[in-house]
Image 1 (spheres, rainbow, N blue to C red):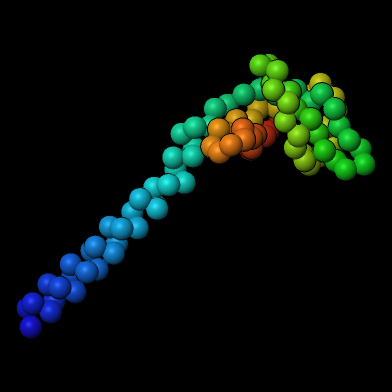
Image 2: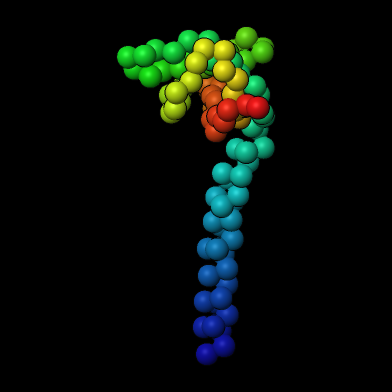
Length: 94
């Protein structure tokens, strides 16, 4: 009877430990995010697409909600995760 409980406990712990790297995966993405300040350089009134340019000269196209004007500054997270660099969590910079 004791052998049954031990084998059940070992099987359960093996399965739970196998999922631990999956739980830690999304946190690794945040380690590669850096804060940058970007300027709105163009706004497409028809589609709502906004072009943000960083001080390094990188251009990103985003859809920002609100009434913004060209030359407004935003603080964003620049994420280098996959084949393409992207911006996320943009907030007005003050």
